[in-house]
Each structure stands twice: as structure tokens, then as C-alpha cells.
Amino acid sequence: MSEHTTEHTTGPATGPATGPATGPATGPATGHTSGPAGGPASGPTAPGPPVPGAEVFEAVRRSILEVVPEIPAEEITPEASMVDLGCNSVDRADVVTLVLEELDLSVPVAEFQGLPTIGALVATLSRHR
Image (cartoon, rainbow, N blue to C red; front, side, top):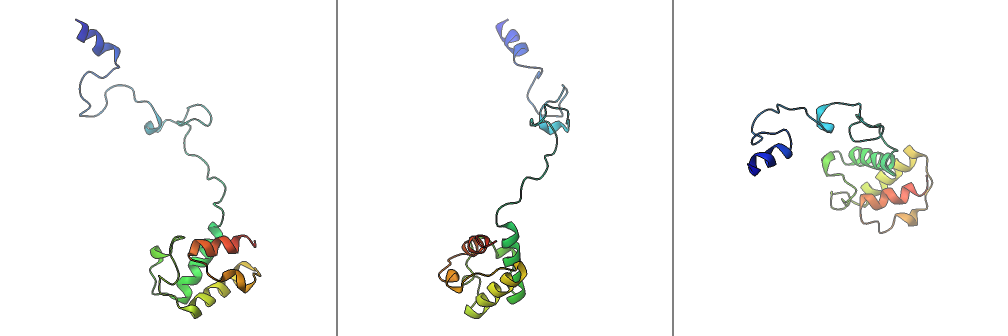
């Protein structure tokens, strides 16, 4: 008798979850958007503020693809190095020049020395926006 009572107190399910749900669905996966304001069931959220440096990263990515079009776009990540992607020193200088022109920035050349990754380049450029 106690098994029967336990079964009823654990919820509406009467057996293993092997097929479509037969009881009322709850939670954000139902498509129901009338939950409390700001709660998980309140529907799609509005886009948040832009990620810092996202616009600069996109400018760098576009410039790399313009200067060295054979680089696959998906390999251009903040963690990647332009050297590892196959950019020589002239390519890297061209990329920086294009980005500076596109974003209308003026950055001392010395700040570009020794930047290990595209993310470091983006951070340096972002500081001058």
C-alpha cells in the first residue's frame, strides 16, 4: 500500500517517460510566455548590450579576409594568431591599417608590437575608441 501512496505523491506521471507527455507541461520549453516578468517562462529576451570589442573584432575579421582571402573565416577567432593563420608582417600591417581607417582610429604603432592574438589586437584597438 505504501508504494501506491508514494506513486501518487511524486507527481502526475504514472510510468516511465517513454512517450509523449499526457499531463500538463510546465517550464520554459512549453512555449508559454505568461510567466512572471523577467522569469524563465517570460518568452524570448531582448538582446543585451553589445559585447565589448565585438564591432572591432568584426572590423579585424573583415580586414584579415580582405588582405588574405584564402584564410577560412571560421579560423579567425580572438584566440588565433595572425602569424599562425599565415599572415606575414606586411599582411599584418595592412590589416591594422585597414582597421584603423575603417574605425577612424589613431593608435601609436608601438602599441601593436608583440600582440600574441587577434583578441589582444582587438583589446588594443578598443582602448582607443
